[in-house]
Structures are given as structure tokens and as C-alpha cells.
Length: 137
Image (cartoon, rainbow, N blue to C red; front, side, top):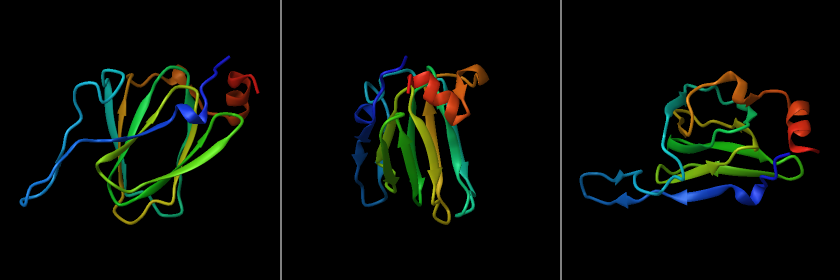
């Protein structure tokens, strides 16, 4: 049984170095509670499409809107919460055992994901009913 709750989700500031030539943000040190094992990004997502629709048994993920905006719908099996990501110096840390769906992508939106694990299909829970069983709901 997984006891991860909505309150365990963390919207984190990414350090920003401001410069007249353009800003720079850095992810290093202890900003993330894990070593990044996989990096991927979503782009050219139609505004009426959605991504995600799964949970992880062990992986944690850190989502950043590098460009544009999108909404992350989070569900711990009992409570739901929607968070809009629209700043490249803010990231959403999603722990294990949280169902997520990404939707309402703006034109030109790019979602960067820094994952704690390499792709492993057996780590995914892709059916919501299976997710509820995993959570003991």
C-alpha cells in the first residue's frame, strides 16, 4: 500500500541567474532528492490532447515548462489537484504513487522531465483502476 499524498507534491523554485543577456537556471546539488537517470521532453502536443495518464511504483519525476504552459492534474487516490506550469524556473516534483495527467498545452509548450529511473514498463501503472488497487483505495 502506498501512502503518498497530494501534500507530498512539491512545486520547487529552480535557481535563476538574471543577466541582461538572458536568464540562466541551474539544477544541481540537492535540488532533487535523487540522481537523474533519464531526461525526456514533450513538445508539439496539440492543445486538445493530453499526456501522462499513469503513475509510477518507484520513479519520481520533476516536470518543468521550458516554454509555454500546461496543466498537471494530480491524484493520490483520494484527492485531486491541478497545477499550471508556465515558468522555466519552477519545477514540479512528483513522488511515486501519484497519478498524473498533462493537458491544456499552449502553442509552443515544451515539458522537460527529469526522472529518477530509466524507462521500465513494469514501473508504470497505466490503468486507473489498477492505480486505485495499488493505493489501497
